[in-house]
Amino acid sequence: MGYDVTVIKTNYHRWFSIWNWHRCLVLTLYGMDVFDDEVFTNKMMQVSDLQNLELPKTQEEEDKFLVKKTKKDESPEERRVIQHNMERDDDGYIIGGAIILPLGPKEKFDERMERAMMSSLQIQAATSEILLDNKDTIGLTKDECITLASMDGTEIKDEHSMRLYMGCLIGMIRASVGKIPEDRAVEMLKLTKDLLRLDHPVIQKTEEGRRKSKEMDKVLTRMFNKAREHKPDFEIDELWDPDELVAVGKFIGLMAESVNAFSPIRID
Image 1 (cartoon, rainbow, N blue to C red):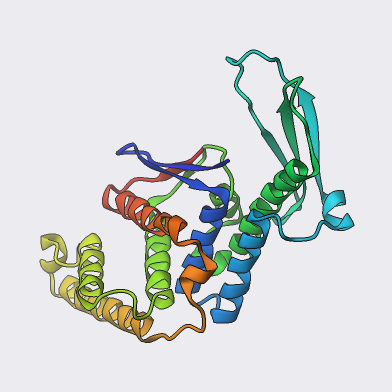
Image 2 (cartoon, rainbow, N blue to C red):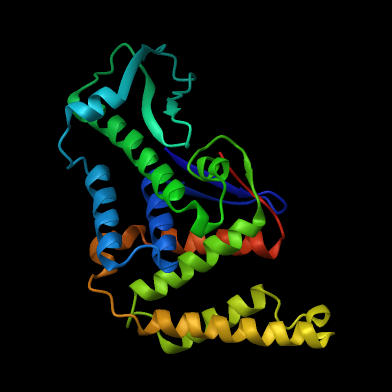
């Protein structure tokens, strides 16, 4: 279960688990200075607890989320399709949800499976919540927040890809102090400036364009330097399995592809 994200114009796509998609967005908000070290740590621990089924089950969540079981034919050709139905309030927040889980005649539905299904609903609600809580900072509308937390095939404008790219990249630098070599950090800064086309002939053609280009160059340099100087009170690889940290590079690369191609993205 996860987010299959495609850059529409180039058909470049990457898949993210529901857990790592949420982590990448938490890291993005951390890079935007929305979350401080303490909140970032708590958010990341929450994901791990849900993924590892370590949060205790409460009556409140049982009332909020429901797992329904249906029968599935034994035919191996029949694909298992797990349906998610979410109920939202007027502000877009998830206030309830259900999973319809097809089971074969010989499959057993135990407490661990039910807990896993419940956790998947909870993390999707949490993803929606962090986006809606901070939609003004990210520059998203309510509907765009819902789309970014859903898998309904709706397009998201490429202008948002730039914000997500910058937030996640800066967040990773802030969280990885001392772990990114000097030459690599310089290279990332250069690639970002190239992505923004600050040296493009059209921009450099006018005095106003050159002035704005220089200002943006200085802003980017300050942002990178500030991120590199930050000393987090956590170890990123203790909050995020090192084997899954590759998701950060996939997220940054995907958003960079969207920006470079002037293409919206679609999440299925």
